[in-house]
Length: 261
Image (spheres, rainbow, N blue to C red):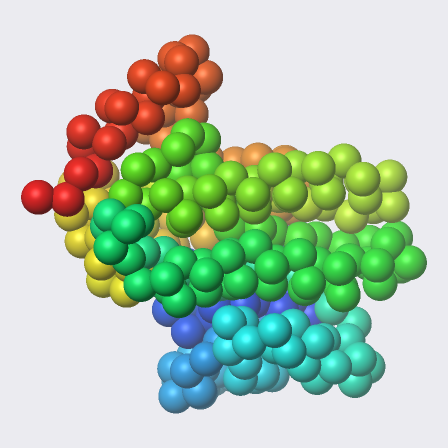
C-alpha cells in the first residue's frame, strides 16, 4: 500500500469525543498519523486514546471546551507551543440548535458562533502560520451541506457553516503557494449524536451517511488538495440545485420541510 502523506505527522482533531471527530481520528490513525485529541469529555477521549494506542498509534489528549474563549490558546500551548509540530489541523468541533429562533436558548445560539466560527478562526490563526513557515500543512474544516443555502429553524447553525465553508475556501487560496492544503468538508445528515444534542432528530432519515464514510472521503480530499468536498451524491446534487433557484424560493422550500410540528 502506498505511503500516506499523513504518516508520522501530528494531527490535532477537535471535537474528537463523538461522531465524525472519532471517525476522523480513527481514519488518520489508519493513515499512520500521530494524534492529538481534544474535546470536553475526558472519559470519551480516554476510551478512544486507549483504543488507538492499543493499535500502535501515538496519542496525546488535551481536554478543552471551545465555548471558552481561552481554549484555543490553551490547546496551542499544550501542543505546538510545547514543541509538538502539528502538521494537520482538523477543525471538527461543532454545535447546532433546532427550532424557532424566537423561542430558542440564546446561550446555545451564541455557543454555536463561538465553537463553529470563532474557535475555527482562532485555532487556524494559531497553527497555520507555523505551517506556512514550514511550507507544509493540512487543514480540514468540517462545514455542512447546510452551508449552501439558508436553513430556517436551523438558522444560526446553517449561517455558521456557510462561514466555515467560505473561510476554508478563501484561506486555501491564500496559503496554497506555501504548500498548505485547506479543505472544507460538507457532509449532510451523518450518523452521530448531533441530532439529539441539537434537538433535530426529525432530520435523521434513510439517507443518513456513516461517520466513517464521511471521514474517509474528507481525508482523501484533504490529501489531494481538494478545496471543497461533499461526500455523497444527493448532497452534491442539492448544492448544484440551490445555485439555480432564487434564494427566497429555496428558503421557502427548506422551511416547509424543516418547520417544527
